Image 1 (cartoon, helix red, strand yellow):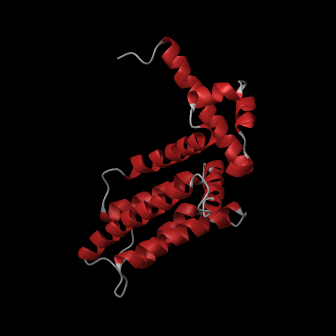
Image 2 (cartoon, rainbow, N blue to C red):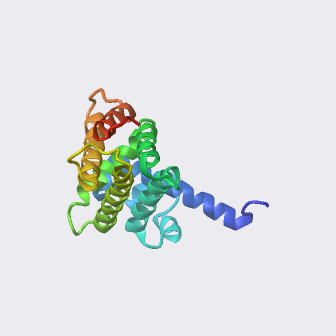
Image 3 (cartoon, rainbow, N blue to C red):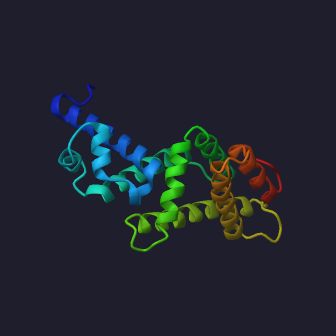
Length: 196
């Protein structure tokens, strides 16, 4: 089957260029300081051109950047359950090491979005709930098989795992020598009766 043709292909390519520029600008400047005019300048088009492809303006660009990031992780975890799901979290941490800008962007946006008026507030809040729920489900499956450390509930294990992952990324961005994948694997292993 042939790919997109003509104007549609050009439009899709331009949208991808704008999304890449938005990622770069938001990574560097944060969402609040990043501007549509700077994104347009990076792409080499007008602000109107950017808004043609992202009619919702700057919030729509932010949403698309976040969705693109999450789609990669979702694809990696698709169909995984229990211990295999937890191993997938280690793989995600490994991929993060080659995507410093993306990690930095997410960290910055997650912090800015604590403010309820931030356009990404609801997205980030729902995302955290979804992640914690999915990790809880994985630990619940492990617990049902007798593989979770005694005295630890699946929810408590999930909250700890997410908190450690988030915290390690912040420290890594600050220049601490952290092996994201190895360290999260080690932490997950500390919650399990048998290592991953």
